[in-house]
Image (cartoon, rainbow, N blue to C red; front, side, top):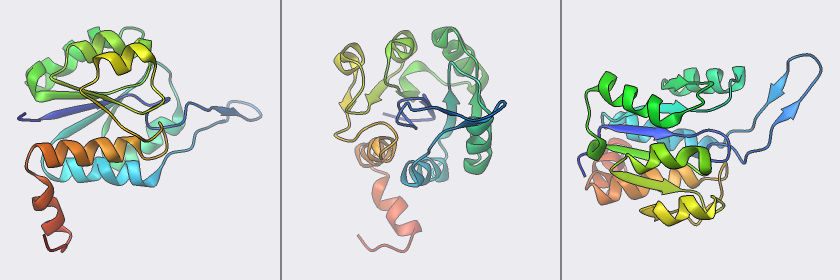
Length: 167
């Protein structure tokens, strides 16, 4: 696979799907730093990363800034958004991977060349996934999937070398 674009769902994929509400408009989400580093890894080899989510959250916007990735929020139809992203990035479906976990990801995931999900994804998502991580959403699944993508694409040793790890 000649990967150029990675689409990542947020709730249930980058997080464990828990949302905490505080007073006023405060919303708190927990993000796994290893997942974040995995996204930095894949970005470092030239793959564009987009966080695609059906909800809107300042926490997600801030996480996207921290990671230097694009975020598209408040999306009712992820398949329509995905088609737009393919055109904007000038990539094909075959050059695109999608990591998602629930039914609202199904149509968009079906359009991608590579599909992956956390271990606690819905049964329908697991059925179409090329890879099901043994890890849970928000608990390292994204990192695991990124490592698998890099290994399968022959780019893992390149990344290790960039970090001074001998192969």
